[in-house]
Each structure stands twice: as C-alpha cells, then as structure tokens.
Length: 502
Image (cartoon, rainbow, N blue to C red; front, side, top):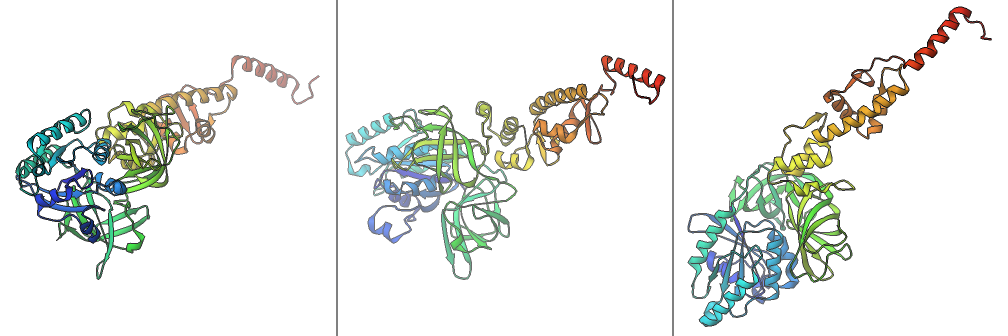
C-alpha cells in the first residue's frame, strides 16, 4: 500500500484536508485536538478512485516539531504539499519543501487550501506565488489543486491527482523488509507493539527479525494493518507489529526491524550532499549536526571532502552509533545550532576506507547489482554478505571467490602485478629456494591468507607449492655469476677435499 505524506506550514489545514479525504482524524493526542495543531505523526487511510488503497502520514508543521516531521518523511511514496490561500507561502512551507527535495520525493501534489476564505483574485495570486517558489525543485511540475475541506470544492480533483502521483511513484519489493519504528507501546496480554511503514519487502507472522541498535532477535507475534489483523503485509504498508522477545521499554523511535542476513550496520558513510537553497553560507565541518534517516535521528560529524560545500558535493558522515544503511538511502542533515535543515544526503558507500575512493560517485548505482559491483570496485575485496547488505541485495557476477570474500577483477589484476614483482625480487635474492613463503607474501601485499590463495589460483603468472609461491617459469637455478663461483668452489673441493684451503 503506497503512503502519502502531508507537508506545509502550521495551521494551513493539513489535518483537516486529510480528514476530508479519508473520513478519519489523523490527530491522535488529546493535546493536538485541544491546540488544533499536529504535534506528532498522525495516520489515516482511504481508497482512491482507481481502487488503490493509500495511507496518509500527517506530519506537524510547526518549527518546534520539525524533528517529528522528519521522522515520518522517509517512508512516503508521494507528497501532498498544503498551502493556505488566505496566508500563502510561509517559512515552514519552504522548510518542508526543502525536506521533500532533500529526500528525493519526486511525486508531489500541491493543495491550495481554504479557498472558501478568499476571493478569486487572491486565490490566483497565491497560485502564481506557488508556481514561482517551486521552480527548480522537485515540485516544479506538481499540479496545484484549489480545495476547500469545508465546502468539498476540489476534493475529487485532488483525489485524482493523488491517484496519478501514486501510480507514477510505484512501490518496490526487493525481498528485504524494513520497518523504521516511529511508535512503541505495550498492549495488555499482547506485549510490545511497534508501528512504522514497511518498505522493501513483505513481512509475515512468526518471522524472526533483528532489531537495531538494540542488537537482539525478535519474533513477529502478530501484524495489524489499518486496524485489521493480517498474516502478511506487503511493502508500502502502515503496519503495527506485535513483537515477542523484547520489552517495550527497550525499544525507541528510530530503531529498525529487518532480517539479520539483509542488513549491516556502520557508523561512517561516504555521501553526496545537496544543500538547501536557503542556506546563506557554505557548509563546513564546524557546527553541531544530526542525521535524520528513517524515523531516527543521530548526532553526526560532517567533513566535506573539498573543505566546504555549497550546492552538491561529497562528504564523510560520522555517527556515534552504528546504523543499518545501504547505497541509495536518503537522509536529511539538520543543523542543531540553526535549528534548520541544511542539506539532503544520499549514501554512496556505507563503510568507506579511511581515504575513500570517490569514483563510486561517477558510476551508475541504480540497481542492487550495479551498487554491489561499484562497492566491490572501490573496496577491492569484501565479504559477499557485506556487499549484499550494503547494496540492497546485489551480487557481482564476475567476482573472484576467495573463501568468505570476493575480489574485484581490477583489484586482483593490480594485486597480481604487485605480487609478481615481490616474488621475482625474492627469487633473485634467493635463487635456490623454491619460492617466497606465502605468509611473507601475504604480509607484504597486505592481504589475508585466503585472499592470497584465491589470487594465486586465479593468476596466470604465479604458482603455489605448499607453503611457497613462485613465478610459473621459475626453475630454481643459480645466476651465471653464482654458477661460476660454485664451479670454482667445487673444483677446489675435488682437489683438496676437506683440507683447509691455503
């Protein structure tokens, strides 16, 4: 089931519009109803004219609740940007559009709300302002629908446009279920219940999952979707998961559920960052930042590779906690000092080297297999498990197997040239020995023994003989100068035996 996320300035009618579209009140807390604004994430659902059932994540618009808004934005398939006709474009409208732009939500519908409160001329001016301000953003081609939740005007057209946006967005099933948890609560007789939007694959009752960052296995005791018990849910579905094996006090918003075999956590990423258009000065490593991925937020250090960044560039992101990520994951960078979103990010390598290879930024990483191949090219050697986990399930078809590891062919060719040089150097210095000891060669090449074994087996230039490695044409004979010296010594021994030489 696809999910639509609302966005827009506080008190521009997002919740009222969702209620008019779905017949359900997304505001869950009494304080929200009393104050007339959304504080935390709200949820509702309906069926669109095509018969597609969709969920709505209603996010808060007030700047004080921006982090709650960020917790709900990652798992949406399409955005509904709401702008009140009687107030027009406002600060949180701009900020929420920056978030949609940062996380790459390309399917957006704009609702010009509360048109019953203004005349036609004011409505036209508001529309013109929106068209001007969404230029060069993900919303520049978005339809603008004039609506009134009070009179019902424009709601049918809005439903049709949302239908079109959802059809264009699609929902991917990669066979890798993932739930970023946004709520946790206990239910008497059932135990711990968590909620979130399921992405990446289907989930079934009795399935065993891993919970990050707690680091423990849990079992799916039960599933609910849209207030109904189900045995299986598909990707794109708002889901409540009853967990066995953990107390609710051990789980928090921002935790992630998935299969242990599908994901690997890390605390350092190579990422492509794009700063928001409102940023008035370049982004540097100075400042206090947090990374918002899924429903979680983590303190982070940011190091632009060029020293500073204004526009699009590469940066290293370091977290205080390991987070399960994959190539292509999008996140939002929040400046804690300015209390605003400053950039959107795309994970390129979830576990880069200390001196990262940035060539991955120039290749296609649109499919899991392409991502796995790109990762192996920059890493040279890695485990098949980590490549699959970091690429979203990809495999490298022409990789060289090396025990639990696989090697890229380009890396193997480079290491092979280095190995041949080391072996030949050793053979020149030790012509009567059968070859260089494998342990010594592995140390000089800075590779693990299984990697060296695979490299030698693959190489056309090297051959292994037990615990040694030699070049294929090595005969173990003396050099001409050494041969002459040996002949003189042999002749002397034949003439004088073991008598002391004079």
